[in-house]
Image 1 (cartoon, helix red, strand yellow):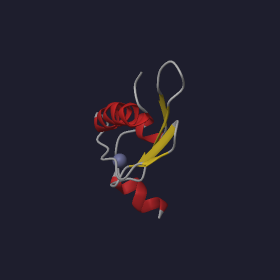
Image 2: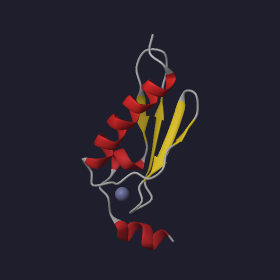
Image 3: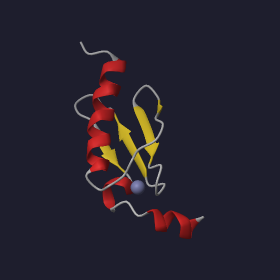
Amino acid sequence: MTGTAERHATLQRIAVFSAGLRGHLLGEWRMAEDYGRASCTRCGAELRVYLPALYPEMEGAALERLCDPKSAERAA
Ligand SMILES: [Zn+2]
């Protein structure tokens, strides 16, 4: 059986890679037992991950658009 910390580490690697494909650089993670999230340090896009029983799921702006620091400046 896989431990929670190990599942978190695996999920974070996948998430960092997926966000990185779009140019995002994820900052600090906030993890719960079966949920975690991080935001891009450049544009603020969020990435949320869930750890259900069978396989992890990800969603958030960091997967939907390319990193654009200018968009964060406009929003601020
Ligand atoms: Zn970004």
